[in-house]
Length: 180
Image (tube, rainbow, N blue to C red; front, side, top):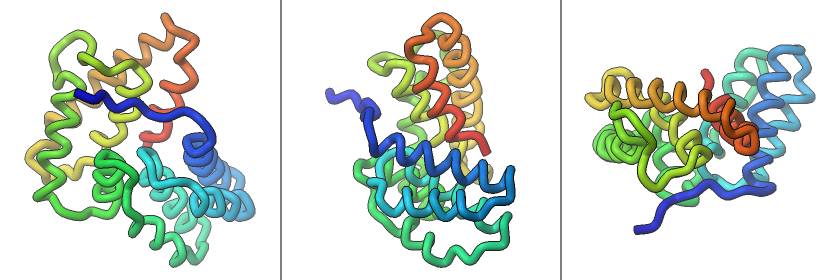
């Protein structure tokens, strides 16, 4: 069985940078930061995290009164792997038919609401999945399980950052990417 692990490197940094720039653009009212975020997204691969960064950038554009029709292309891209495709599907409010079983799989992968650590996932990989659960529409049958699992996992990961400062930045970056 292959265990998914988030990659490290430039593509991930571009996604995190775009999300941070979009938030900063709203905070400061400077559209130039939003334009830079959009440029980063155009160049970034559509891996896990891309959909959340694109959504954050799009919402920041709406907040600043920008015309963001060009960002619609970002939501139409194909994800690099099944989890990235699930994320793009969730931010685009696409099929519940495939989304519900996929989110149930993520809940199971993270251990549901059972205590303890998920088997085969390190803290960084677990943190990258928490944001997917936060994207679950409230009307889907898996939403209560997804929310409870996300809350449990998020609390555990925050506590682990205190004990493992070497992983703290990566874990917190993924958790902050999921903040609405």
